[in-house]
Image (cartoon, rainbow, N blue to C red):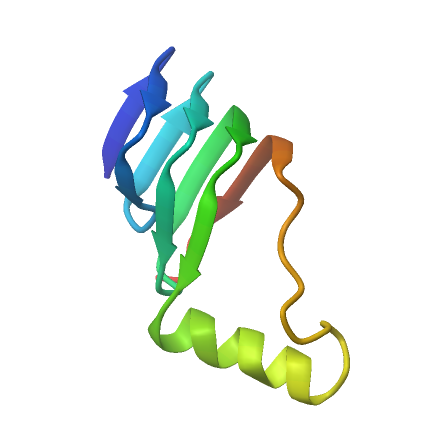
Length: 88
């Protein structure tokens, strides 16, 4: 797993899978997520463009179809927090 700690990640393309981010600011980036494992702690997401592919996109589409998410609904422009997802 790629670990970045105490880093400002700006204007990059970031693949969320297999990323471990700690005390980072992610700003003005394209973030791609396909449904795999990731981990982040104390990360601020500021003005990122989220892109979902594969199983993650399928989940988004299902949630829209059953009315849990509105079509075209976007994540908030700034999010701070911690999470761990391990699907192995």
